[in-house]
Length: 350
Ligand code: SAH
Ligand code: SF4
Image (cartoon, rainbow, N blue to C red; front, side, top):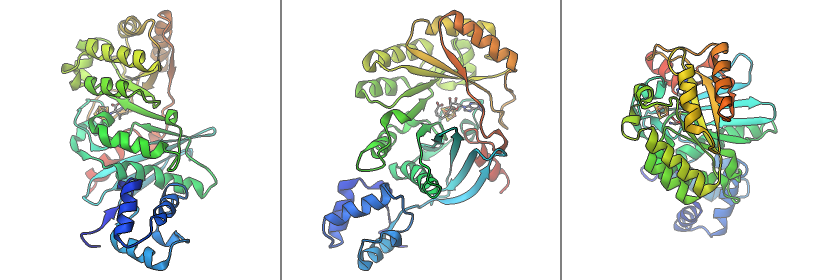
């Protein structure tokens, strides 16, 4: 490969057209290439059968489709979850997890290599921040799995931005990737089928609300008092709960959409009746839903998941405030499918 190499998923349609015309090709070739990439998910230029050989060669010499390599691949014992650790050309690692559940095929994708937010219970937070992913690197995770599923006559039904990184800390690339994935002429997934999960970057939540998009938002709350949240989520010092809740109400007002709050239940930490009551008071009357996830233990944090009894008591308390909640099944625990956990294992064994 030479200097001219470009990552083709980083180009939007106009940029691709421009590249191809610069290479002396007619404009309609862009549409053909685009369809191979976003409708057929080909992984090699040679598979683009309606292109002349000369163009395939030009593309092979100048561009790459998938620039990441697979560093590790794991399947859960029940075969329903598959996790890939991709290595990017500069050596960084990111994780992508496919979860099968009934007819759903949900892909959990990364938006950054590492994360700057430092949440104490999170494997990605424990490793620190390396860099933002490009639009192409975000989109490539989806197209890789779309290709794999297509071989089995299956397709992705949902995407959650709950892999490595804080999506709203990589705001522009995340939203450009969503545009690409939802565009009819591209991957054409419904905007409502993608969930952005954020730790609570207040200005970015307000900005996102102003855009009035269809793509749902989930807020990683995890604690209902500043005293508790400060311990778990350092960014809470900067944007405490009152500011975050203001931004959440602003989002609901602007979009009319229901918000999801994520809550990792940590035994003896944030699973107390006091926290459930504080949460009930915080969310009472709000257009929202709470997802409870028993903590996935990580190497750098001593906490463990709450018992079934504690989870049930927490839910029951919330229901007294009219706040609906569900317990999310922990999928792929046996393959460290939690955020950042696979990279940890691979890197620490190198
Ligand atoms: N940075 C974003 C999205 C990636 S993390 C965010 O924080 O929302 C996706 C979700 O996994 C978040 O709700 C996060 O709090 C949660 N999470 C991280 N580590 C976890 C763990 N060890 N156990 C359970 N949930 C965890
Ligand atoms: Fe970053 Fe989300 Fe992990 Fe917090 S939970 S460190 S924001 S990836």
